Image (tube, rainbow, N blue to C red; front, side, top):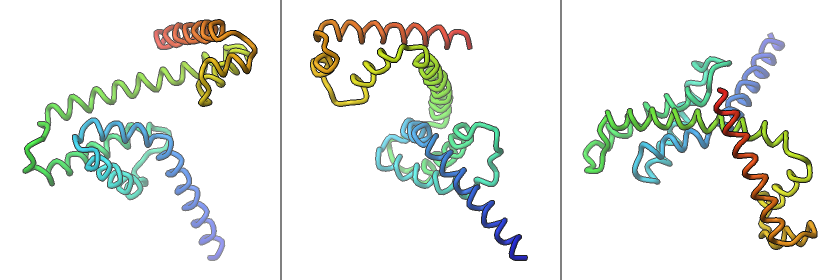
Length: 181
């Protein structure tokens, strides 16, 4: 009997860890989705908190292997509808048709953004180590181009041109990869 309780506790702990990991991975997507449908920032944050609680309560219904982000946004949609019903007397309300159109557009753009992010990772793998370090200095730190140029012992103009070339190449690479999908 004790072994069964220990096994249940481990499975529960694993399931909790999986939920936390998935929620953290998709939290921005759900937040953007809710904020696009709820006009007030503070109300949207309240709906986001309520959605997180509901996601945990209904996590047993989530099917592993499917898209957690899509499932979470579906739950969020129902939470937004409940919010709208609760605050129905407010003058600033979107009608259900507009909310549905916004929701579809957010879903579409989230998928496109995910494809672009995946393509960026793949394209960055193709960038030389030197150019990757250059990008890291420019974008992962608070350094200005002049400071980066001093660190790599180049002129500011040459550094700017090098960064522009890498950015252009990445843009073209991402465009090619997302066009193939």
